[in-house]
Length: 511
View 1 (spheres, rainbow, N blue to C red):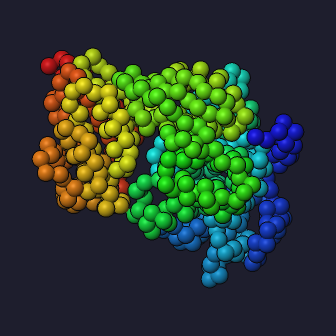
View 2 (cartoon, one colour; view 1 turned 30 degrees about the vertical axis):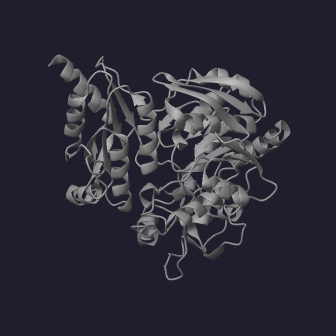
View 3 (cartoon, helix red, strand yellow; view 1 turned 120 degrees about the vertical axis):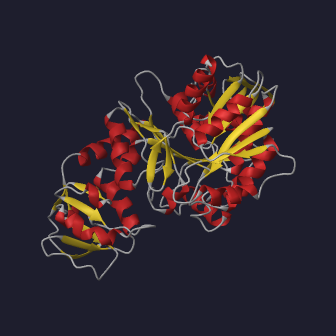
């Protein structure tokens, strides 16, 4: 944790650089090559989307998966860009507009964005949370446990951004660096001295967090996901590892790592000696471990053993997996110098996270739960949690996304068949793929004797699952969680599992 003196020095430095425009000479101090242009030219914003260019911006023409930013340079200039940052020699830029040639546009943007906005990360105790599953729950819970009256804590994540004095909807789990640093700066202005953020593998690979100064980096787990983007699990792991071992440009002071996860143990072996490690899990070798676990329909209770001693913890969060999330958060609190006993007292007031094991209650006599589980491991964990506290049958509604990792589809179906009594396979952001093709891949995972139905319309699938549920049963609606839309043919169609479930339950009660 930064000392008060370090924070004061960093915040003073940020304040000195926060206001006013910057000229190119102030920004380009790391050897970026200006091909032509006026080094005294003022820049009032850094932008990577030509549609957001306003007069005076510097436009970063970044290569993308579908489009190359170089194709939009003319558009950016027409909108008033003062400078173009590009990797291409062949791009012609008018002499009135500065051209900066760089080897890596994304990395340059991250470096310049940090400098342009006064390095706000240096003034914050910033926690980065990464892993396949649980990032949103851990980051939101950690913020809840950190926050005190008059001491706001920032949050950047999948569902929303808390900026200290206001809350805004999230537009990306890990924002582009041109957006990330203004968000961190806003937190400082609002009085935050601590912040928690989710760090995705895409965000790491695309240099959105390159050079970001993390006080604590937390690794939750690693299981199959995003293999349509990464070249296998090893490549996926290497991206996650970068924010721990210095490859991302800086080292965290403390690494909080899942000691029960094989990838977590491999990660620990790769860390330089100056990074302190705190492990969490159920195993004896972990500094933060849970024992004597009791799970029921109201939550969990366990004995926490930690460097601060032993404490009984009662949590409203369901299931064994959420105990792991809680252990991660408590270890993070300890890493930041907070009193774990005080934090435990706040666990009971945690209201949960939108679309994460969110219970829908309309007096129906059986449990209905909406969860974001969209990977095989997340679905397995969700079904396992609910099986532990369901006396009757367990029903699940789930789907698999289009234009994504096709190998995940049969695994998702296998998990559903193994964990649920009755399964409703349906649509879940089919994007540009036909449901028939998605269903064809999903059917490869059907287990003999499974009770599974394929229903194209998601609302219809949810309705059928609710019709089958009896007192003591549980219906899990998985895959979309907090999302309020379906992605179909490049169009976002309004669809919220929680709202749909409430509407259907209300209608069925009146029938």
